[in-house]
Length: 175
Image 1: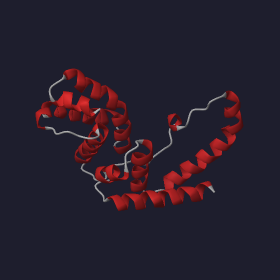
Image 2: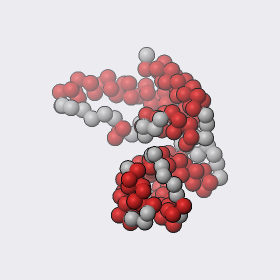
Image 3: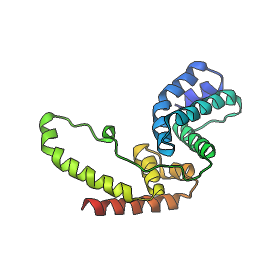
């Protein structure tokens, strides 16, 4: 992906398009958890990419395009709302559930799975907003602890502590 970033910085419109197409959906999903206002999130993403294209000559190399875009979108949404704590509660969406391999397996596990999901949803609702954001970035989006810390403007150990406390709390709801 860094080769694509280099091509984009050099002015390659196809590379820019590919970055946009690759990341728009995940940026939108992440942004919507900040501001549950579809047009506002789409506008923020459009403005982000417009600025990226306009300022591409001044951009530097990045080891993670996804990280760079998430951090930039988060800052943009914070500025547009005038709030630092813009993340909204995490909710389990149906498409966040793992795929089921067979009909038989689905029938066997459906009831247990639904019970656990209800318990997990109740547990997630009781977590702090920061815990929910940290969990989403770490486990839904796959960022490292260091990247989560940078995105959330915290130190890495604080992020680790927040995630650890969140997991301990969630375990208590599932047991």
